[in-house]
Length: 252
Image (cartoon, rainbow, N blue to C red; front, side, top):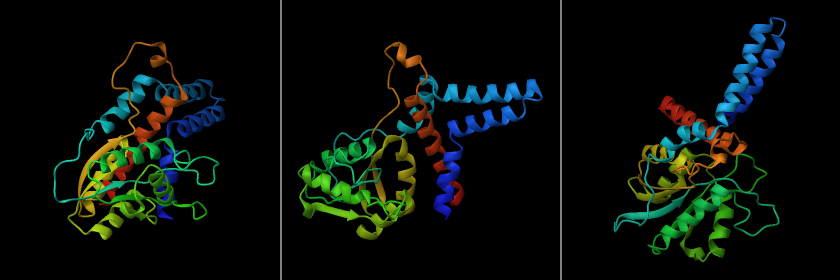
């Protein structure tokens, strides 16, 4: 119930629901024209700013840049595993094993396999379940795609019960033991929260971020200044991860 409440609150605080709520409130207040108009204008302004590329990138970039990309695995004999954190997928879609993964999940898995190939003696741990018991765990989708991409099944460790990042970290700790040094592969914006959870679980994580969304530099093209749904999604990502960091800080 608590997990469902966290997700519900986070989604209600996103720009689109807030803007729609303010718009509805403004319509109710139209009998006081100036007040109703101001509330509607604020709602539209929030939606416009959240969809504007400079704002979206400014919000998301600090999260994505907190941990540098990992080009090569360190020559560390204590390194215990490469861990790919769960994401989204469509298990029943008529696509290939890789095509069933969401964009972020596919990039996480490919990055994880790229790093694992540098140290193929290590296990490749894939994690993630679904909060919906009717949906198969994404860890199973990862495993099937990894095998198709050339990873031997014997090198895979499938943790298909954790439903959030904190549980994923604890599952990895249970599988490898506290104090284990692991490479954590997840989306760049999610990495700060993931590192927090893995440290809380008693592990020594090494960040390997991927799936970057914020622009590193601008080219001056017009589309970089026009509000769009994709930019709104970036703002939502930044707000969701910021709320997640605030939540874990409050819980502990």
